Length: 73
Image (tube, rainbow, N blue to C red; front, side, top):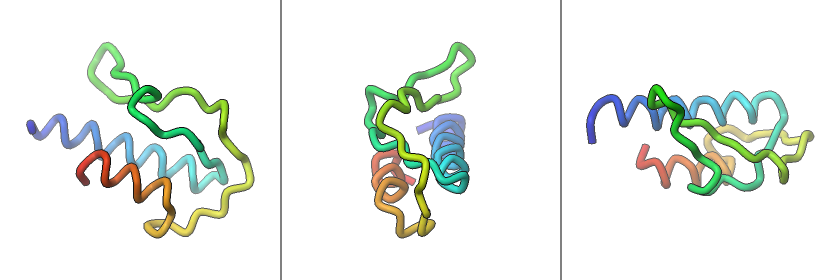
């Protein structure tokens, strides 16, 4: 993978981490909900299953752990 691919994946993970820090659990993180923007950045979409009372345990969070694994981080 190119460095830029790694950076895009890391930015997506960091963005979801920030969403979690704000108390939001996406609830449906799957490839179908990740789109590539015209300039190449990855974007998480479809927050229809999100919950707004998430107390994220950080790296122990299942959603973040699953995303780290899926993104090979």
